[in-house]
Image: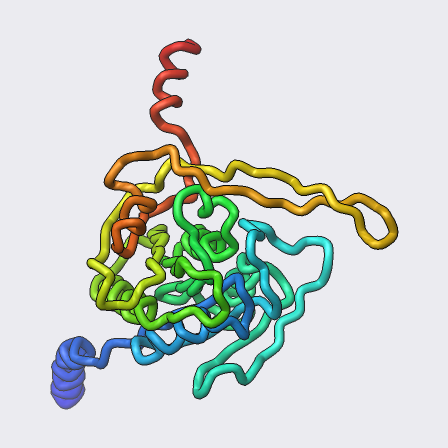
Length: 279
């Protein structure tokens, strides 16, 4: 009888414990932050400042500018990863590789787990329209999504090293807060561009599609002091898309543009046509 009574008390105790577990404090979100302008870039520091109290922030960024690297990865040379004291009370690392390398190393060697959110930027210069293809900023965000980490790439339409990031900080925080409010699809990628305007002149956030535009490029031929030819790429951004639902239109009309992008490059409309034509 004594044994039965003790067993009953133990069972009763076990039944209470699951109820207590439900009221435990929610675990703090882990936010990975990277960029393509390098660990010292003002845009990166402004992004950290904007969201530093929204979760546990870990920064892994290139040790030098990596603009225009696209989705490049380092395979022919060793990668270096060093801890740096770049931000007060925030863990930060600099990597000798590309923005995509930074994301891969962050998950495998720094965090040892996938973060809840990856933020890339704030880039110095636009990443709207076709720029998303070339952008190291956006490639870092896309790599995170490939790794099943919801991500956002932020860009300010100002290349100046002394650019005013106050509006960017405001809208970066708004967007990150919204994303953290509910569980996101693990492959979510948002391309966010912010006009180079004071916050009070920005009219809000506009969800857009990517405009059809491209660069009309030219290579200027020059000679170095030894008389050898070299080429310098120049070009003009030309928008062929007059739609009022595009990122280019939104930015020209004082909105922050938000374009959901994806790494699946399949043209599903053409796929359907070819399936019918090529039977």
